[in-house]
Picture 1 (cartoon, rainbow over the protein chains, first blue to last red):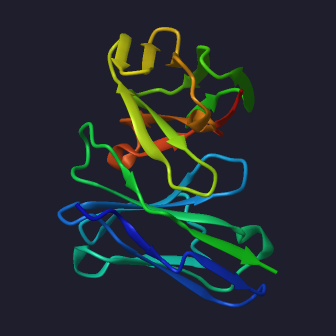
Picture 2: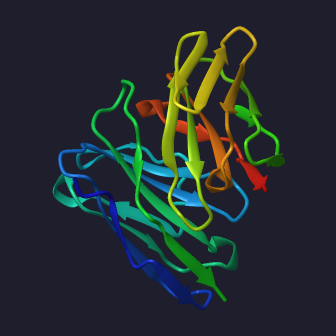
Length: 115
Length: 112
């Protein structure tokens, strides 16, 4: 079974530029999550989708971050404009069901460096 | 919200046993997860506890006490490959979607 795919793996941009990350979850997984993991810290949930609807985006900085999950499969996370403090690894995860014991499977992440 | 505490770093010797503690505060506890994360890699699932007691899975065991807001991950017969960060994560049914809140992680270094 293929895992969660993410691209790009690495991205270096200058502050105030825009960047987008892509995630393809495990086939059949209805729930998709985007996390931000700053070096030395645990992952912090940014947004959770159930199919193509947003379940929770309370920790998403909506003035600069946006995310969508068209057709309930792939998802993109965008930052516009980027700030220095956005330097982090952006992890995408998916799980089969929401609301039950549902192990989250993580992708390899995109390491973003903002200069 | 939740508050999750775990030690930042631990060091242990190959072949030994190490216990990584996690304490949490949450109003609607609905499960605790342990994940392993090697440097530069994605977290991988280790264990899940929702009821009090010990869950054993090979060299790894996880314990939960809901009344104390406490869990530990026990690693036996340590191997060099166990050097990684170990993340404690709590699910709260009060949050939409039963989202997970992660602790900061415990970086374990296994020495020969």
